[in-house]
Amino acid sequence: MDILDAIGRTSMVRLRRVVPSNGAQVLAKLEWENPTGSMKDRMARAVILRAEEDGRLKPGGTVLEYTG
Image (cartoon, rainbow, N blue to C red; front, top):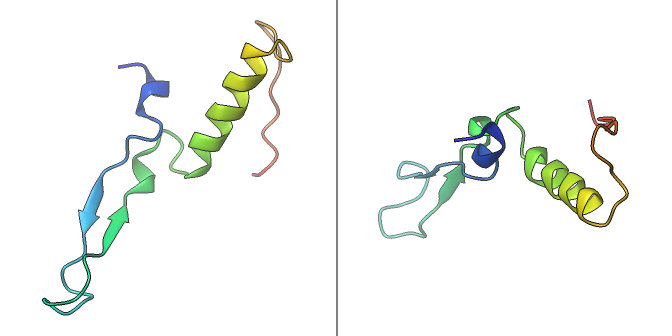
């Protein structure tokens, strides 16, 4: 698997102890499983792919990460 394929494939876990047994099903996403440990990975990948597709980002172009 390419590291980029890992983006957005984070596991979901059911939280059984924070709600009553007859209550709603509550799920949590394990965002730290993303390559950089951030939920922003999906957005960043989408922005880069779109820029590549429409020609705004050329091979060898530079991408600046501004959220750090």
